Image (tube, rainbow, N blue to C red; front, side, top):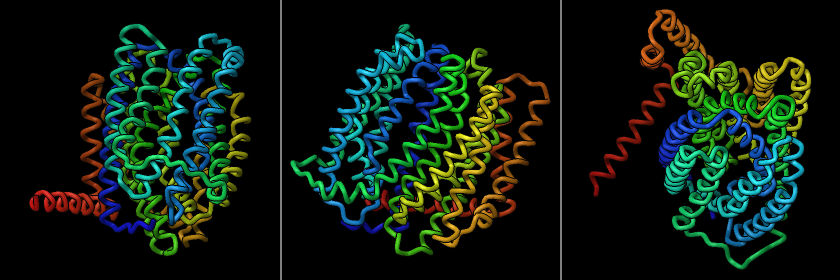
Length: 489
């Protein structure tokens, strides 16, 4: 099944992906604020401890098959059904393992309630086989409108459930049921919007073929997940769930923004690049456009968030979360580099070089563990700074292979993002100066946001930055196409 992917398809897919991400992000943002005001840092820390095991298990359930199905040129029902039944078996096996392992995990952390929390929350793994195939089918066809509907609908329902339970005093269980509800409704909505259904088909040969590509992604994702969560394991054990909750909340804001914006672009770019994998020049142009556009959007947001962090946390989350501000500022700098990380890695996957992907992950994680080991004596803040240092080095490592695969050098990549970086620094300086005027937190925050937005886009237009011109022209194309469709009805 070959899918012809045109520029119009990519633009339309990006529109729907942004619609979904922005909607989900906005709702998640509101829900997380309300829950943070009601619940304690310890409640959030308890969930973080549990989601470490869920995340690792989720990688094993997915098995890299989702990306393999998208990357493969000709996919049929035999491929989809084989992967579905394999994932279903693995998810049941892993859930059983977590169910019986939960008492030992609770004992390790000296938190008895983790037994039942882990057993209930790990039920989300049983939805993964359905979500994985449904997402692969829609991603392959670039039908992101249906994904938007399912994710937006699910987050509204699950957010409402979480808030109601938190107000009723259910504590950590409000977070548990909210996540379970979210996965259930995503699966339910996709089940009725995606025509694909599993058939009584299974091929060991097809599974082996897909696994030959996917196992490297599994290994890479497992290494990455273990590495990203090892800090939480250490903080939860050496310090407390409350400190872990504060650390995690500091990361949550920049992560929420960047993962939604950058994730929208990357989820569309993978199938788009994969469909053009034989045309290296076109893939290079896609990679460059993705890096430039993502950086133009993400750099000022991370700079602005880092500067307004303290009044923002005080207003939205209350004083009890102020210790999270330094973590928020450090992670803003770290997440600003994500466009370089993810775009380069997606290009490598799209070209079918999962072997290179795995090698990069091993190199980065060995380096990261070394940095983590050196930073532990400096406490939680030292560990956060170590993450930033590792991220800077990793961005160079991720970019290196494409200097040969696509003739897109590290120097070229950094030259492409420098204009957005410089403009963000100047914007940040101006926004920071406003807080020196001594206004109230609310008025200062509003003034900083307004001036930051007008300054950044005003300067981008004045200096005619290529990325700004491209974004404006793309938005005009979308609006023009929507208008034409409306007039023809």
